[in-house]
Image (cartoon, rainbow, N blue to C red; front, side, top):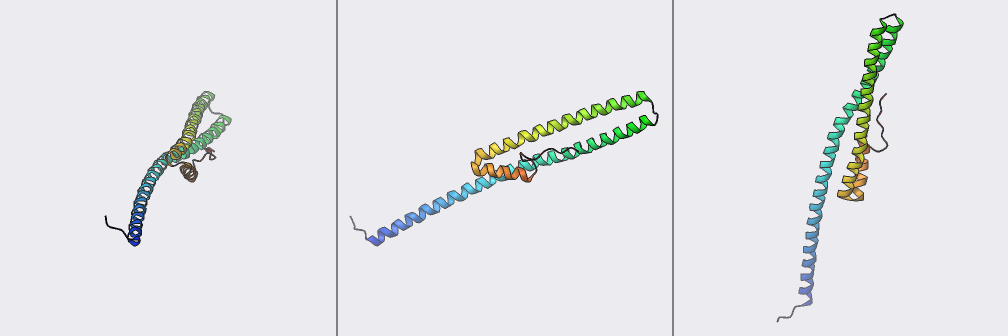
Amino acid sequence: MAERSLGRTLWTLVLALLNATLILLALCLWLGWSLFSTVEHITDDVAEITGTIRPLRAEIRDLTSQIGETRSNLAALREGGADLQLCSALETQLASAEARVAELTDTLKGIEDDLYPAIEQAAGTAFGNLGSAFATTLLEAVGLGPDSALVTE
């Protein structure tokens, strides 16, 4: 058996450490790539959902303001001596429309309330505490955080 010199042994040790470092670096790069890919998918999903919810909010606000204007016009018609049966029928239709808008508002609020914990839990499960912080920041950035409220004026 040939004797090894101390220099050759140290050189072999340095090569082994370099090899292990490169393997760990490759593993970290792969894990980082997977993490960012998953974050991209979550971001795309949240953006898609937000893209659906925001126009609904605007429509509900518009409908609410239109119902208010129609109520004022109906009150003006009633004061002007319009047919009371017609005014009562229109008022019934307006009450029905208001009830439907309130139902849509509640449904949208329920969707938003369910969306926030689901995304936070999914991100938390996938990425631990870092994922929960990311989900909270992302949802607050798109206006769906736990403190944001559905504004219907």
